[in-house]
Each structure stands twice: as structure tokens, then as C-alpha cells.
Image 1 (cartoon, rainbow, N blue to C red):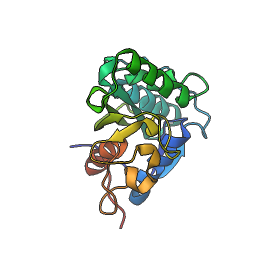
Image 2 (image 1 turned 90 degrees about the horizontal axis):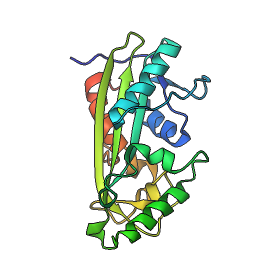
Image 3 (image 1 turned 120 degrees about the vertical axis):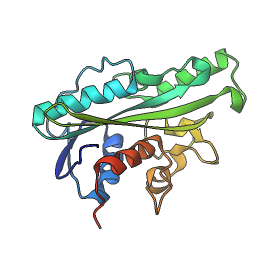
Image 4 (image 1 turned 30 degrees about the vertical axis):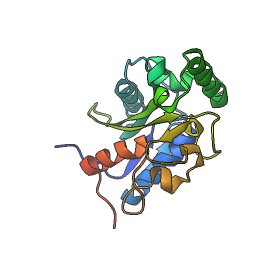
Length: 212
């Protein structure tokens, strides 16, 4: 049986977009969340070979540093025609300045080099791995995925990262064109569409009690 989470938690991220989404997902459960950035925690080196491994590295580092449970995400865009790139290196493709427009341009350039122009040649998916870690080293791991197509040009100024490039299957708007409720709102009001929301619903079912 999964370990239950109550009280205060550290969100092990320095990414303001991820922090905002995570706080919105946690809010209905009455969880008080502090960010790693606000607590002055350094970002650990992500040496894992998978999304799950990197999420675990971040969550365990924050839990051990603060003596509190910690919640970490590792996520990225996987493009089939690029052999799975950028994958776990999605953030690094944006460089130290977090220039995701540059990263999206790089993806488009590589797709054109491979003559990937039709939608079925531009298949991709977002993956989110979430990890809850406790100071004693216990972890709970969850993963969510959403499939779609890499569109060009990027559309929308909402969201963050690669959202303007990603058109989820069954929709006519990119993540960058969706508001927060449509992208990652949870049932009953939302559909839990995003990769992060899908992973979080698994986490919530296992480790959280909803506050009425």
C-alpha cells in the first residue's frame, strides 16, 4: 500500500511554470507547498537515464535537505522522428537561458532535415514522471503520457516550455493556446488532459485524500 501524504511538502523545482501547475494540482488536497527555489535549495545534477530516475534524484535531494516530504517532476517532449529526442534533455535543449523558442526552432530544423512535414511524420508525446520522497528515503513513483503532433509554427502564449509546439490528439488547439483549466484541470471540472495531470491523478489516488 502506498504511503499517505499529509501536511507540508517541498516542490522540488526551480521552474516557475511547473511550480504553478503543481500548486494548482495540490490545492484541492489541502497540502501546504514550499518551492525548492524559495527555500534556497540547489538544483541537483540530473544524472538519471530516464524521466523517473531524474524525478527521484530531485525529490530525494529536497527531502533530505529539508527533512520534509518532497514532490518532484521530470518531464519532456519525445519526438518519434528524432529518435526520442529531446526526451530527458528537453530542458537542456533550451540552454542556460531557458530559451524554448530556440529549442522549438531546433526541433523544427531537425524535422525538416528528415523531411518530416506531414502530421503522421511529426508524432510526439509528452511524458511526466512524478516522485514523492520522504526524508527516510521512501519513494512513490508515477508516470503520465499524452500523445500528439509537433506543429509549426508554434501557437499560443499560454503554458510554458514546448507547449506552443504540441497539439494533443483529438484537439484543435495546442497546449500553448489552452488555459490552465483545459490543460491540466482535474475531474470533475477538467479532463486531466496534460501528462502532468495524468501522472498526478495516479499519485492522488494512491497517496492523497481530497479535502471537502
